Amino acid sequence: LRKLCATNRMFPSSLDLAISVLKLDGKRPEASGGFADVWKGNYGGREVAVKVFPVHYVLLLRPSIQALFKEGMIWKHLRRPNVTPFIGVNMELFRLSLVSEWMPHGTVLTFLKEYPATNRLNLALDIVNGLKYLHDMGIVHGDLKGNNVQVNAHHTACLSGFQCHKMHYIEDLAATSIGSGTVRWMAPELFDPESYGLSRVEITQQSDIYALGITIWELFSERPPFHAVLRDVRVIQHILSGMRPSRPQDSVTLGLSDEVWSLVEQCWSEDRHQRPDSTTIIERLSSALSSAPVYQTRLQVSSS
Image (tube, rainbow, N blue to C red; front, side, top):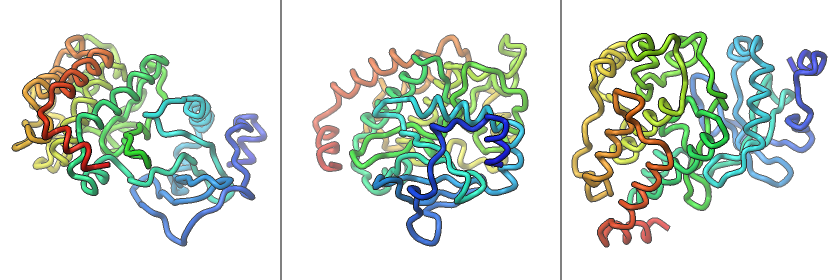
């Protein structure tokens, strides 16, 4: 595949990481999933995460590999504290692997189990700041959820797992979203665009904001949305009927005030035009954080 890409000038040299410099740590991946394994590695003295795709998945990606590399080029040039730094691609250690900065605390959900007293409003602000940066660049994330938010050594939440979508349409929803298990974070217009005045399934900033609302809910519930519903088909029916996750019990002490809960509900509004933009969300979360009770400040101190 690497030779094919080189022959067709599809592989940008700036993304190509030399195998002589990229090394893996250990004999097993740090995490495994249905679509990829994540190894810890070292690249020129820098700790990195090496995301390795299985052969069958690489073969599925082959027709769109050039688009993947273009997206990689965009990601590589994104510079923001709340966006996971992308380093490059290697096709020698494995058929295809993507290399990014190592995040020692894993996902934000893993981090909350490790540091349950962390101020969750700060994490929410980190996430929104990262999303605003992408939106200001004309990029939509397209797959925002708790498992695509990583936490670095400074306890800062960083966006990952995004596709660098440039405001485009999805040609095959089943292959790109439903098949990857992100149904529970998807806005209703992505399931039934015609009913929402759209001619096609379209990933937009507004659909990102919907997913953001669900992700903030995750920070306070530490559960997947609609966790009691096993089948995704039923989840889609719930979303289209206007159902949303219920307010987590005892979450006020964690920072989910009435003000913040109202904001979350606006983020996942049925009408995409009623969802606030990232700038507004930052302003309102900052206001909620500044007016939080004293105990909320102590939680932040105890987590550092």
